[in-house]
Length: 107
Image (cartoon, rainbow, N blue to C red):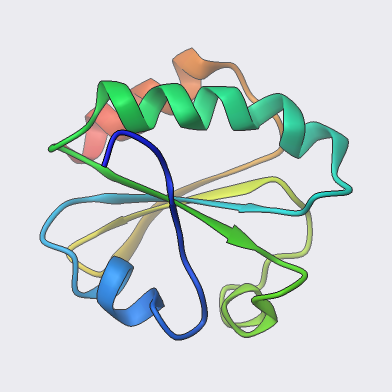
């Protein structure tokens, strides 16, 4: 891995729900300014947690079913899944330290 994977409506079950690793999912859109602020942090986390956490991105414009299923109303929203269940979430652009703390909590 080493970089975030693209998660689609079709791959969500396999990549997130059935994953043996915790999964950080970044819900974003191309036009979203705060999403662009969070993107480099998400990329760094994908490298730093490689093999321990799967990191993925969901484009809410093209993958509307997942966004609707999880009630995503603001972006960026980052959801953390463990054993296929939603374990934590962060809404908005937040410092890397906050995301690291939340990831460490599920490891």
